[in-house]
Image (tube, rainbow, N blue to C red; front, side, top):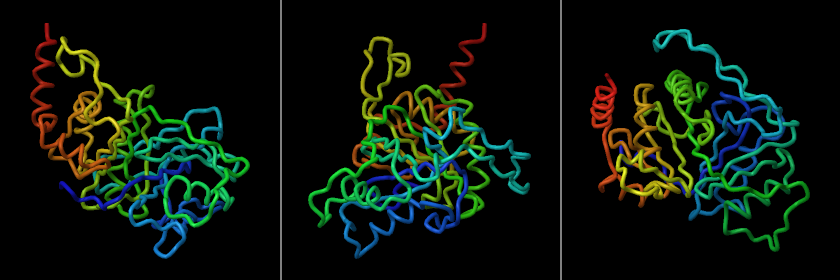
Length: 304
């Protein structure tokens, strides 16, 4: 599966408060389609098209931070894990906000834009020209009124493709993976969300893990009690995994998140790919079978 992702330099993740969308997200109905606006400005021949800085644009289940004070709702329980059974639809995750604004995340810059207008062309143009493209012919660029400047992202961001309208395979496995990550992930240090099509239906379930630049592994996580806390080998990277099943989730958290290791048989590619590839083919790689053996040994050691 290695090297099976489309080449891209940055990833825009738009908060919609939904868990499924039109097959093409630019065709999604409703006010302020951010994906449509940004794809239009970045298409070939447009002013801000930059072949050296290609962008992947995704809708996500993340809710606008000011939508409400209540936590995001979990998706509806799946009636059966059998692929032959009909999957129950997700419940809404929350609102986008006031209908005219949303939030978005940008990787690998690890920037969170907490408030950006969904239907104001000035906001769209300022974001695209200032953060996504280096080829704007409009100068100078002034921050438009109401545009909130970004803040750094310091939490792990785990994205799971579950675009049922686009592909049934992702629509079936995505909710199962979401529920498993929600069960095992630490909400204080990790954000888990559903995203629209990222490419590679044949590799469902697709999972992207963005590891913040300051992420560290602790001595207990590395297994070496004599080592001091140190920067994760994958800090600042985006790791793509494919054909992920719920049984892999704990291993992904243990090996990739807490130890900075890439699981070779799930690896599809990544952002900041050179560093990640060196990690994969260097000493910082592992396998799911290796993790299972270590986990089984640890479990045996805990038995009185």
